[in-house]
Image (cartoon, rainbow, N blue to C red; front, side, top):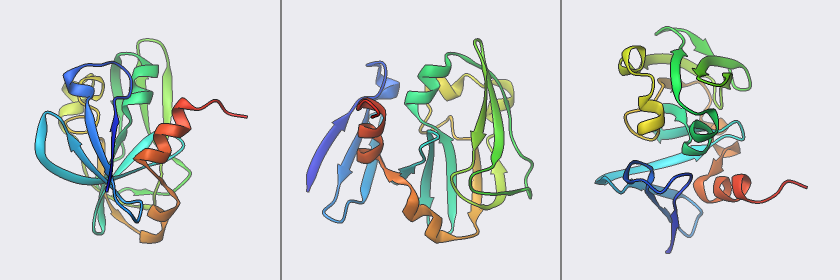
Length: 163
């Protein structure tokens, strides 16, 4: 078992995460503030993370992209029951500097939306991998998860120059 310590963005307690890369390249994730939580997290090239829990997944923004966006001031999310399609816009985040359309990394049906984001959208900046989740989705096609990056691949995707 190789251990990787990745601290994306600012070095603050809320942005420290531990990723364990297993031999079959599965990434186990722990928040340093909640060491009892174990999660499998995948990420799209559009900087949306996917926490996998069988047929259900949670989606959220990576620490990298929330830092690039700056302070989030509003979020427009789909409704419960809406269908989202991989590769299509499913939500919109407005920050103090820009409006960013979020592209769905998977297809499925929205089961729930984060109720805290309406009143406190900046929780995406404060705790993007826990309290800042966006939506919970029932997967339409589990195989779509395989096309996503693990956190180790994502780390290299954002830190290495593109050719």
